[in-house]
Length: 430
Length: 200
Image (cartoon, rainbow over all chains, first blue to last red; front, top):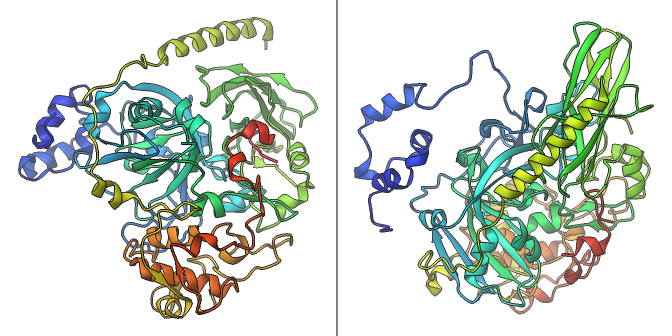
């Protein structure tokens, strides 16, 4: 394809299948841009890019502000949490996908100019344009993406962790699930010719802070994608437009957004975030680092914190389960504060490393009780309770109350208390 | 709830959906070389982007600096957020102090007390500092700021010259504070005994 070809013509040729969807994402390209009048007409016609009903009000919420007001290019909030309590099914709309950018707003990248460099310990260093990437085979897969700090005591969810008034968005909003489309990274790496000594890749983003992350070559060659699509359209800027790494099942930090470079190296590069901010400090002063995989976990989204049951009677308990270790095999629900557990019904497609929707029919008798869920993944690993998690960490649960220690990957069972008046509260305690 | 019937229905649906997904997700044949897709970058193109500094420092650029020059640069470009004593603020973390606090109830994780590699200081200052002017510092300035941070943590003397040869040799106080210590062992989560999304 001729790189000098006008952007608009390239768009028309390549984007036939995406026509309509991509209109809103198109940026002016100099002389080839349509007139301002027609652009205005497109943007004000809600039929050209649909909107939800004005009765629907679920929105992302930010965590503690770093900057207020924020200068251009930086965001005021540390991150935006998905309104998981209002979710239906398993796919998170791209507009509601959680966002953590370590203080940076998305760079404004023209896809016609964007390039991906592959270099380091390869036989043939390569540069790909967006058009090059779309000439390669693609796959489309459902995968959750979860922040290492989701639900942790300390960190961006810390102030909500044991707050009785916390909602599921407050405690679990740093997970989302999308249908991602992209090129398997293994195809790109094989084309470049990975040398025998290359043991890690480092991926680098284009934002002002140029976030960088080291990933072992085994994972890079397994199921990692260079993703350009999300839920049937191009990635949103907040999710890495025009390309990102998608590293299924692993801590969010690996999924480098606005990807501009992949370097093959022989050992982890030890960037600032991976070597100094994402390790979890143990009480003995040593730190766990590069924990990679997000463990099996689940959460009841309805009824959940802040909601209210209007009165006794039937309710379908609904929730999400997922595991970075593969497919969810079994989900159980307890409606009697953990005294008994019963198998829940799987109500969605089950894909590895993706959200699964579960349901459980329940008749509330109007008395105070506690609802919980737990899941088992395809390796037979079961989501731990707070006590089991503390045991695995070789600490007392009280440690989770202390500041300064952020135990990442906090996948403990979430209890929701149903009060006699039907109000629902966060019932986790340490 | 009639669990028996619904369970069977679920089992079948579950099996069917896994099979369907596996079929859809099958990878294309790998024998292809995808001719003429992508091009070879020029050495200049690679050099212009290759800013990541590994622990052996072999990517470090020419240049040098020391803590005395670094102190002046710090006062000009960094002090507003990181503080006069490198104590940090609401906007930025502390860069010094915290020695001996890692086992306490309120550990202070600073560059001096926590960071395992000195090369990371150079890498991060060059790529991401100062905020709002990322990438504006010249190599000599980055070397001097790195030296000033190391000196402020009693890791080097004030006149010690930091450059591509000396920086990778600095051993940070908490270098051995991470599990596993050996970088060659990090990649194998199974061998490390990682379970349930947690590593020992």
